[in-house]
Image (cartoon, rainbow, N blue to C red; front, side, top):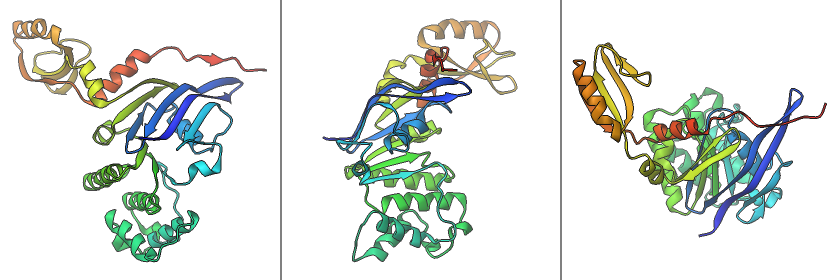
Length: 308
């Protein structure tokens, strides 16, 4: 299976307020054909800079980036690549149908069934009924659907998606996840960022955790969960929380995460104080793992002294 995207020891610095801050620090990862790669991290971690580098919006960086074997610094690398930003900037005076037609024209795609092809994608994203309505008249969720249809209509080999499910209701999120799953099965590659870790967990084959410009780890979901399989989420009733890590669910009911080895002592302490267990379940969500990995990575920001 060939590689759709390669980052090799990529670093990027910016000058800010008289000093140089490293936005990316020796970042390396790959995305294969037919793979969904989730890229997650807190605000300011380097996700947007990574996308700008791969799309050649930023070209003054160290290291190497290749798309299907072609350097990202060459225009040819972006043939067959489609990008949907977090806040799509579609021409509001045009209709969804016109926007999809323009996408075909920009990519130099000639189809005898052009009209039907555009309508097919609007139908798949459930916005066909708005095909001839100005974009300015659409809701945020429907604008997001049009932006996704705009990306898919050109039959891309690589989809770059920044918060692709933003603004969608639960039905819309499921529809988009299903479409992306079909795209992946057909050999398409997806690089996506999202703050909604549950959505990433449903879609991605592997995850990259980035923090302060550094790629902390790149793993498959089952690997991350297996490494922390001895963690449990305990919900209990008591007069007061048993520890600072507990979160209050409602009056007299709390929840906190514990290692398996700590459970017996915790339960004994709870019962001695007149409390009781409500539920005990594995704490194996991607969100839990993410914050554990992030907590372990917290450290002072390394800066490169600026000149003058």
